[in-house]
Image (cartoon, rainbow, N blue to C red; front, side):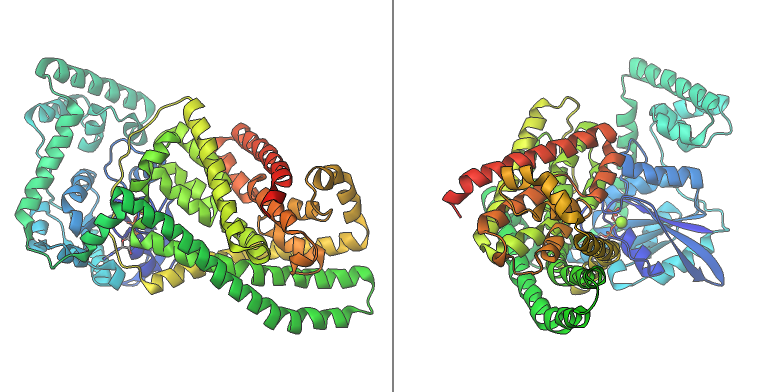
Length: 637
Ligand SMILES: Nc1nc2c(ncn2[C@@H]2O[C@H](COP(=O)(O)OP(=O)(O)OP(=O)(O)O)[C@@H](O)[C@H]2O)c(=O)[nH]1
Ligand SMILES: [Mg+2]
């Protein structure tokens, strides 16, 4: 038995899902957090129930790729029960989807969520009246506090075997007539599919019917629509939308009562955050404070872990213990341990601090404000304001950021955004920038790398925005409400992301370092380094071992620095490199080709050709910038 959570974006579906199933899924305060279907199992009343979390949708009409996942699931898999999560503070817009869902004739229950926020805004909903009008059970809930969750599930289970006599939308006369016209020819097709045919939603019709029938239905739909448009001069999609909104508005009038909310500081804060000048100043300060915190707190933790834990208690004893062994064995052990040290000491502190801050941005709703503020700028890059969200997520990790590009409208925008994201210094590159340049050269030189990156990204974006052909789309994004971020959620997210890092990166790091130890003992490393020396040393002026580190950086970016430490035999880079070399190394590792995981998602999203072009382009770009830094760097460093 399957129960699916369906609703508008950012209403709380994923909170429901993770609270019920215990499966950790991403929960954030911006629309489009969930991009793929996620399943979990719960037991209730002795039954095993499959619960499904889905990307949010605004309507069953035309959809982007994430929304398609939901539509497809609804129609092809047809869950046994739908729990429609509705945001009480935005009832009218949410009911638009609810009214459409009713036409699917799947047993449905409404979880009227976020009643706490609605009450703060002075909105009260009469749930009994709403239930009466829709002909369905309505349960008020506050998902984040766990209020009403069990009740919704129990009510949903009760509904399974009932035939619901629910409300039907009363469409305008002409639409009704067209639909009943289709009834004659296609008696066995549900009304919702006929409506899709009338609206020329081929995707929907094809999900439901076999090709010959789908074609017949679509062409009948087209004929009827044209007739209406010519004879009655009405636009069918507009009329249908107006009918749905009319009905939603009518219901809201009946069930919502408003009262004067308490003095709302939220609104005042929001006005500041979104004001054109002050908002940008806040944005820039927020970014600077983020870097400063990551740098200071991450750096402090790094030094502490290296000096207090690893060096005295792990590395030194291991070196002493292995001193009598053969070089291959000794290297195998010591290099692996240095790999572990690099992971724990260099990467985890910066990554954890960064994710903690990013999750505050995500949960507070600040990302949607940033998207609004930067809309003008992103338009010049050929993107719409929405793209700010994947771009900012890119500072965490390029992989989910490129996956989030799904939600952008056109292929052109997806291409531009993906290219730009693969240039964004992710948390792994931040490890290198702050761990190397921040620690050994200075805070402001580290900041200057971000500025340089942003200049490069903007430049590439401007060129692509002007030159890439394809469609543009307008900026439409829902502004989710400001919320106070919760400590628990922040800690949970930070833990989830750091754990992911541990699982994926650690085995690689261990095997990579052990392999290097052996290769070094056998003299293989120097052969490789000699081979690339004309470029790495001759052209760029880096130390010879840096080339090997760069190769490992392709596996995972931060590995470049970890392997650099392993190869240099010390995490005190100042002893083996000049400030200029460190600066160059950090810039080159940030730019030259995306890591393998990013390449894999790029290939999935854009295809092999675009991905190969991106790889070649970034290598050349890194080489060019590296040489420029070698020439002009000495004037500054
Ligand atoms: N105040 C309040 N906030 C809530 C409630 N339920 C969820 N939220 C917040 O709403 C935001 C969105 O929650 P999600 O669970 O990610 O929303 P979703 O419906 O899965 O959204 P998409 O994945 O984008 O479709 C998060 O910031 C939650 O903390 C609630 O009952 N009250
Ligand atoms: Mg979600």
